[in-house]
Length: 135
Ligand code: SF4
Ligand code: SF4
Image (cartoon, rainbow, N blue to C red; front, top):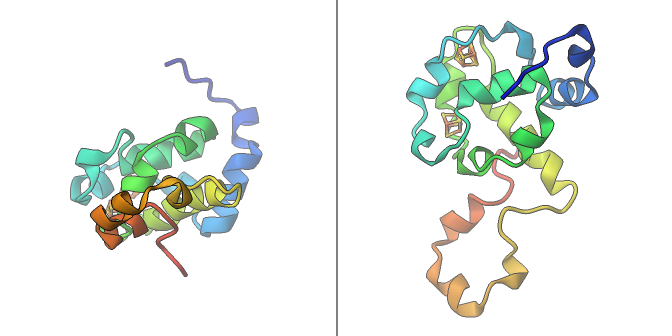
């Protein structure tokens, strides 16, 4: 993938929105990888937590919003406590989910599931497909 890094990139409204809603300064991340090293959900992710922060720094909106990682995240906060720069990665991921949920784009459309499917899926698995971090 070709990445264009420029001053113009940094003025991307998507970056500002993610920082504003999450309350996190994305620029302090120096890509140590400690967040990803402790994340219990990486085997189900296509973009690792440290990569999520890098993509957010660069304003890769589509890649992030289409990623399955934001739904695989269990909001366990392990990444938050491991980050030496104090970035709350889980909040950043919650913001990415929120941006989709505000457009009524859920990961799973419950109203389209059959009753048999609803009975078969553990409730916690369903909840993991919705908003999770409810601060
Ligand atoms: S632990 Fe913090 S500083 Fe390290 S890669 Fe993750 S977000 Fe960046
Ligand atoms: S909050 Fe999400 S990204 Fe962070 S360690 Fe837990 S599952 Fe991984």
